[in-house]
Each structure stands twice: as structure tokens, then as C-alpha cells.
Length: 122
Image (tube, rainbow, N blue to C red):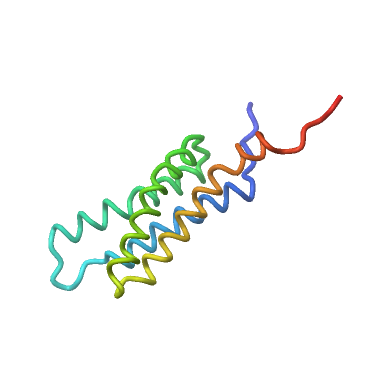
């Protein structure tokens, strides 16, 4: 029987940031009392991917970090554009931008450690 993989602090950080981003989108895009189908679609398009990727990372999916960091580039861009153009949504946009950066760094940290980490000489 194979041993389950132990999760590192980076794995927990990545999963937590993805789930937090999904929660942020749920708060941000929650439909108004007179919600329409468009509101529901916006909520699903923005909230579902980070929530699913966060759960997948906790379940041990190896590619969740990769896809999270790819999508985080779009989330970062979206956050910057909204922060620049819609002052009423500045706090949500800056939180989105910060979480996107955390996702990018957490997803890429193992590779960076492997590439630039201390090497054994011998």
C-alpha cells in the first residue's frame, strides 16, 4: 500500500488562498435581491474555478497548482483593472490581486526551490 502524500505548508497556503479567493468572489458577486441569470453566471464563472482547484489541491491533485497559477494571471489582471476603473470595488479588487499573487508564488515555490535551492556537492 502506498503512503498518502504529506501536505507541506506551501500546499496548505495554496489551497487556502484558492478557497479564500473563491469566497471573495462569492461575497463580491453575490446576487442582489433582484438577481438575474447573468448574476448567477458571473458568480459561477468567477467562484467555481478557485473553489474547485482549492478542494482538488487538498485532495492531492498534482495539477491543481499549475492550473491555479495559470488562472491567477487572469485574476491578477482582473483585479488590477477593476481597482483602476471602479473605485467602489477597490477593496475587493485589491484583495483579489493579493490572493492571485499568493497563488502564483505558492504554486511555483516548489519548482523554484528545486531549481535554485541548495545543492549537495560531492
